[in-house]
Amino acid sequence: MKIAISMAALAAALVASPVLAQQAPAATQSATPTAADAEAFLAKAEQTLFDQSIVSGRAAWINATYITDDTDAMASYFGAIDTKMRVDYALDAAKYATAPGLSEETKRRLTLLRTALTLPAPTTPGAAEELNDLATRLQSAYGKGKGTLNGQPINGSDIEEKMGTDRNPEELKEMWVSWHDNVGAPMRQDYAKLVSIANAGSKELGFADTGAMWRSKYDMPAADFAKLTDKIWGEVKPLYDQLHCYTRTKLNEKYGDAVQPKTGPIRADLLGNMWAQEWGNIYKIVAPEGAGDLGYDVTDLLTAKDYDQTRMVKAGEGFYSSLGFEKLPQSFWDRSQIVKPRDREVVCHASAWDLDNKNDIRIKMCTKVNGDDFVTIHHELGHNYYQRAYQIQKPLYLDGANDGFHEAIGDFIALSITPDYLVKIGLLDPAKVPGADKDLGLLLRQAMDKVAFLPFGLLIDKWRWGVFDGSIPESQYEKAWTDLRTQYQGIVPPVSRDETKFDAGGKFHIPGNTPYARYFLARVLQFQFYEAACKQAGWTGPLHRCSFYGNKEVGAKLNAMLEMGASKPWPDALQAFTGSREMSGKALVNYFAPLQKWLIAQNKGKSCGW
Ligand SMILES: [Zn+2]
Image 1 (cartoon, rainbow, N blue to C red):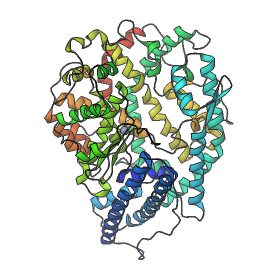
Image 2 (tube, helix red, strand yellow):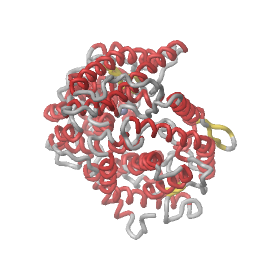
Image 3 (cartoon, protein in one colour):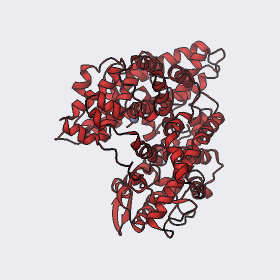
Image 4 (cartoon, protein in one colour):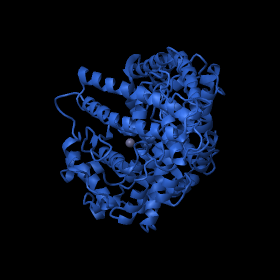
């Protein structure tokens, strides 16, 4: 559910192909560039990238909605052009950044160009090719990875699904161990090599290491960003600890002491997810008696009212229209892929696109008439409305305020699909709105995904920052990973691990080289946005019941934040909508306050922690 092609996504494309930082930078020939040189360079770079992104975007769209050998070749042809351009411009931007007398505005745009890459290669001959080969090999090893179940091979998506539904601890253990042994362990040396090359590239761009470069995208010194994430974690940890304690008790009741002891960490393979990152799949094991069932099901409601896929998207549009946003353009309806075509291969993974950095916004989904996709539509449209709102900005500012914002907008709107909202759009009978006695079920189901994710969202990059800065040497990759998982998540592998393993490689974003802090930020930001919107709407009831559907004042404030794009430091954008300049976990804690109170009561007499 990511944004696909836009100026912003050009940077994301580099995740897949960090090629070609080969050329000597084309920067100015004079030793010390002037501020005027920097301005001229930026104007040219922005226009070139802007124009190129439109051509590449169209090629990528055709490829994603009509997969053939030819469209694959076209998309990668244009992708490589984008990539090369970005690398050259990043190196140039690093040089112009030293020019005397630069305005803040110019500095900001140079920084955005310089930090747009995820894996920069150094200019050493052969380094770019080697880095590209390593990145491709790691991704492809992950894509082709298989575990086993009852001795039979099982691929990545099947094993992931199976771990969500299988409740046999021996089978779960086999799947967990075989996946990490088969997929992660062989990547170890390639990954270490990739780290050293990317670090050399980051140094050329003026950063201490690649992790420092990633952390420099947040309008503050890299070290301060690490502290900020720790501060947020401190705010939400007491809630996580209670959820952990309660879940451990329920798992102990189900499986017995031999599988899941009453104390200590939780066995990682029992939580319904390969990485124990979201626990919603085992909701039935923890559901509170009597409050677990909501009494209605969105899929049934959609079916009963004869909704088809397009009507579902119209309902999503209706939410944004009710806030005062302009309707989607006719081209959205003409050009989006809402239903899976019958006669060709397409990429079904839901995404939102901005083809011309203006009004040609679209979604690409293989929508099914069900409750999950109803949520996904509201989420994807959040990206589209964000993209359309910031089209007024300079090309380098055509992006979210930071990378957590873009995902958080859609999620925040999706949080608003409350029973009240379903009544307002005529889907739910007012008499069927679940009473307050169902609140704990509603909240616990949400928390099993949203709260359980928090320590995982944090530790992925904690590990990677340590790997990039050398505080986690190659000889301790596995120990550091397992230690962080135990320290933050309170989980342990089902069998003991040693340094012949590489469990980090068993998670897509490590071989895929996708920074992860954004997902942690999006989790807390969406609740900050939601709380702010509910306050503006004058909501006084329990936060999780609030719907601000139809509130134009909320919409106007939201738009004020969205239209800023990346033009200002993110605290300015956050302030425009929420009044606060601080990213914080407090809104999330407020949302779950009734649940936290209930969990504390359930955990009474238990020795929590691990
Ligand atoms: Zn998304």
